[in-house]
Image (tube, rainbow, N blue to C red; front, top):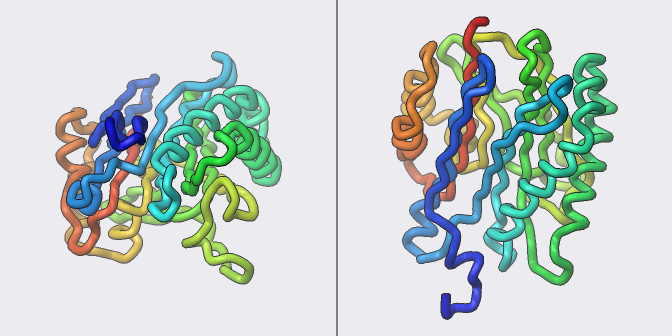
Length: 266
């Protein structure tokens, strides 16, 4: 506390959360990486799990953010941006619900940009922030199969299907700005939006790059271990999920935040 950064001093090394909404089961963990443990610095990742919108247009909102270490207050920025974005998307829930039903990716992108701009505008002026952000919205009405993920920066969404992880994010061509440097509030052009259709039995994984990099770069043992752990018909307990989420991947020691969604049959 005497170092002066009270937010960092009060940030727990691990967050664990879960939810059961109808046929949807959520498990979520945010874990301080070995590199930060070694340095004695705080966890810079953050996450939010919430239900937004009215009953007739309710959405399960899952958000992860990774504060960029080069900015002094990124740990605070990642925390604030997931929560402020959730508040803004709650106000847009009925419009999001309608756009999902219409499969209107352009409208979803416009809503995402408006919500994230509003969230960024509420960050404290003068603070040195830089953070990625990924938000997955899942209707709680099981009859609606459309989902949407909003993204800025590294990390993103994977689908576990038939024992294999499949990345679903749009890939930027890098012609103007390398996506690896994209971060809120300043170093980004726009929020990407990806519309997808999910079926019961698939597992959706939203994560920061502490988990998506090993999956993306095809660490076979790591990917297979998590596919086996999370590919069954039943979601793991909270304690088992935390243990599994901490599976080591060689040469990856960053913070790791992962949220998984299972959907059972009606």
